[in-house]
Image 1: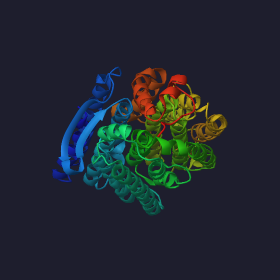
Image 2: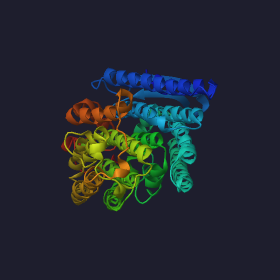
Image 3: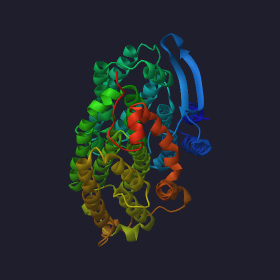
Image 4: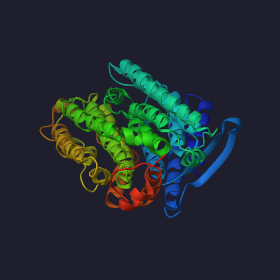
Amino acid sequence: MVSSLLIIPLVAALIIALIPRNYRFVIRSVALLAGLLNLVAGVRLFLAFDPGLPGYQFVQKIPWVESLGISYHVGVDGINVGMLLMGVIVAFAATCVSREIKRLEKEYYLLLLVMIGGILGAFASLDMFFLYFFHELALVPTFIMIGVWGHGERKNYATFQITMYLSLGALIALVGLVLLCVQSGANTFDLVSLTEHLRRHPLSDSVQNLVFPLLLFGFGILVSLWPFHTWAPLGYGCAPTATAMLHAGVLKKFGLYALIRVALPLAPTGAAAWMHILAILCLGNILYCGWVAMRQKDLNLLIGNSSVAHMGFAFLGIASLNVLGLTGTVMVMIAHGLLAALTFALSGWLREQAGTLEMRQFGGLLRQMPFIGAAMVMALLAGCGLPGFANFVGEALVFFGAWHDFGFHVVLALWGALIVGAVYMLGAVRTLLHGELSDRWSGLTDATGLWRRLPFALLLAALLLFGFLPGLLTRRIEPAARSIISLTTLEEGAKKRPAVGRTTLKPR
């Protein structure tokens, strides 16, 4: 069941490769059908997952290079089952909005489907080799799509910058992963086997203090951890709409996922040593990037900086090193994935209609484009953390989880979320959607018809569903989060503070 999520888009990419390029309707139809089938498969997987069962479910393992302990190993637990659901929702919505592409469509849809397959494979993999391989498989199409189908005069510079930053981050993370496997002595890349081995034979403190910062900064660059974040706003601002939706919404969460899945349980001593530094750096995301977003005149640059700021909340939840904070981090990852995809889809519609995203040139669009305008109001309010949307739940859990150890940090993060976030989000609502409508924009058309409205409605519905019924996610996330935290804390400390509190590590 899990393998189908990555097989469907990759097979569809192979089919498109065999279709003549002048069969444009057939190519787009194959991509849409693959997205729809993946969406159905993802929803079935999410509903079939039993949060009451321990460990991984729907596991499939096929040995590949047995001498190195490498195998195709996939499965789901509470950490990645929601991520996979979010991934298939965003992937289908991104495919729907790709009608803006008018040239080299065959190549575009082929790369899009390879990117989707790589993303879902990375989140489903339980083998570190394939976890890294699928991430790189998704990353390479990102660079190409920005360079070929990107927008703006700075798209070449944006392509160069995002390639350099993300390649550097992936290389640093690779060094950390290789060092972890070599020093473990387990002769395996399998995460389950490696976790069990290191539980019995933990790495020395000196090795952990070397491995963890490599993983933290390597994966942190991939997530746009401040101050290594400058590639993200410009890259998203120049990217095609679907590429921005998929990378900002889903692929960027891979770094957070790898920290939770690999770095925390396998190098707990190193994690504890670096958590206060991470808590300080994440304030740079929340506050600095929030202030930068306040100064933006381009809608995509505002959304890009806002996306980087929201990653600070996810890092703060990881830094708390408790069940509540980690559960909040996964909620933030899912909620922000849906929100980032929605906002970039809306800005893409506006850019396609108007040819610009300079906010001061607009005004009164809510009357001209009532559906797109209403969806944008809801998306920007969700970005403020308004109750009723999934973002509020995730951020609230992070704040409560981090309060005990990082009270002052939480106060600053709250200020950043409630004040700074509200200023730039509500300012964008006022500038774009209210006021007088210029005659220049009287020809703009709203999204009409089911297929044009479907991607926006689907993403909004998911945000509202998990906002009003957060238990659909938290019931699945909490047991897996508790299992990961149990690998980093003493049993005595866990008994005293099962959900929140300062982390104490296993004695050597």
